[in-house]
Image (cartoon, rainbow over all chains, first blue to last red; front, side, top):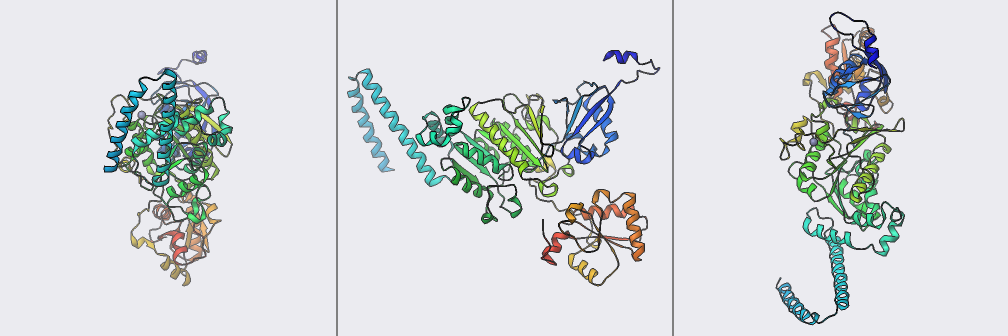
Length: 102
Length: 472
Ligand SMILES: [Zn+2]
């Protein structure tokens, strides 16, 4: 994985961020707002849940209001706010707002 | 009382006599006597329990000490022949067995919310033979509940949900002690009620009560089996159990009220809360009998449309959590409606966005209609709702599409065709129509357009103008 990063040409002013293709799974209200159940997107590989969400919002802007109440999981594991994440191609990221109905 | 005092004196004397005699008894004789006394003791407890069931089982005021004592006694007591016959199919499960059944019979479960989740949860807990079942709901049964709240009946529409479930449960399993609480579950009563039970089920329908119940369970140190359902999706997890997180560890901030959808607005297919409610009963039974692995620190997501379950591993308890962390800032229950900025109900909160002169009543609209005054009527509901009912000559533009360019040009074309400047918006209850008016005012370029909405929407129309229109 890191080899890929090394193969990228050196760019003055900073490294080009390595990108990967991942699957987003939207649940409940996020699904309604995004308008899709799942989507394949390209995201920055070295990221945090917040940064990842900011990138997702660029394509699925409607979910902005839910931002603070979402659970983000990477391959079915909860992501801690601020946690450093290394994404790989094919990873599954779930975007889960709470449901309160009964 | 004087009678009781006399009896006590008498038995004390008798006990004294007995002591003298017994000092001469053999070990075998002593054991035999002990067994006899124990049986007597059990019978007395059973009698007391039956007495309590016959007289006071519907009283919400219970003395937890007496009950705990009785239930303890049941837990130690071998199963009766009737119990073995009744529960035989679960008794032969090696993981569960008579041990599990005794634990279940001695246990108490509180179900908060007697709706789409509470009904299936209650029915399976009662059928399995849980000792005592508390049922909290201040609401009354409505006809539109029956498609998912399957323990209520047509006859009980308009009566208390908690009492209705209690009645159904009693008919299913008379052994279960049912305690209905026809109360609104507030910060002033929550902790007292929660403390009387070992396991708590969150079967509520709103965010504020979910935070309240979470905090009460942390303060009372009770596991919380939390279920929720909407449309075709459900969620299930166990909070505050075996080092797992609480609701606040995962959701420290309540969601903005405008992002929360209730069953009344969003809809729900009855079998979906049915699935989740049944699983809540299962989790409660697992916790009580110590069978299997509870869904602590795991969130189960059910997608009814796809027929799939996904389990996400959650974090453990958060050391900085405001209620269950190392230095909690919340030490007693707070005002949860204020905290969430939303009422502790799933009933619709009326919106008051427009001034009275920007609105028309249903009577005023009828006059306008009958006078054939040219205007464009925009129904801002979803297309599926127009299949249920609608007013004549409306055009359908759902609220989310109202400020799109093609919507605006359609409205402008209609207006110029009619030679009119009058737009009227309508929705189900007169809330979304107000939002539509505000958005249209901003989007329609000419300021001399008149944009109004119908107060109370189609619901008011059905009640006041046309009784043949269905209300949903
Ligand atoms: Zn917590």
